[in-house]
Length: 294
Image (cartoon, rainbow, N blue to C red; front, top):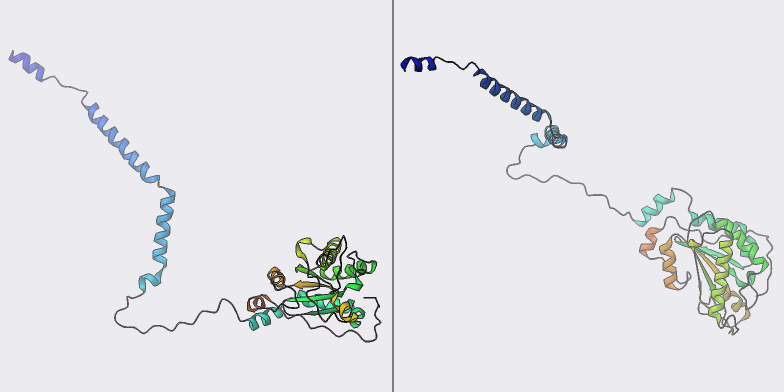
């Protein structure tokens, strides 16, 4: 029995190296897995970390700036520039820029219709926010009618060529005298004045003016320029006015105030202005005017 046990103990397992080899291969595999994991970084996290480190090391002021200790006098700070300049500064600055559209329109109208202005059948006036082109109704319509005359087409065609290159809003206003009218087409002066203003708007649109720019309103006999006691006064009160404003807000302000003749530019609208519109220019001397019945 002792000899047999000794013989059994002397038997050696020559395949034990396989266990060690397997352990080595396992460790080697784990090593490569770890190395691969380290090499496969998240690019997004890497960029965030890189930018953070760059920001820290590049901001020398943050790292070098000493921590204040004790009382220190406050540093003098220059006041910030105002966000909105005064109206005078705004007007002066913008006045140095491009040609003001309102001034260009007023100048061209004065030059093209000097004879009508001299005969007081047309008036050009305005301020820094709008200009008014006032036309006597006798130039455009027959008595008690809103159908444009042949002369009206030629006249409005010339006006359209002047204002077409610009994008300013156009507010057409119709006025009558106090003489009552009661026809099937025009029951009152309200309808007549509105129809006359609408006729001018349609004529401007036919000449290529963008309809989006335009609006029409009739005031009847309730906005007279002078007394209706005389024939001359009534003729002057029968008129159509083209109000060319600087922007849409100005046109809405005119609508709310009734007419441009009664409106006054407030502070907010003045701030929107760019350049003062010219006063009515003196008509050229020696120009004959075309006469027309009131």
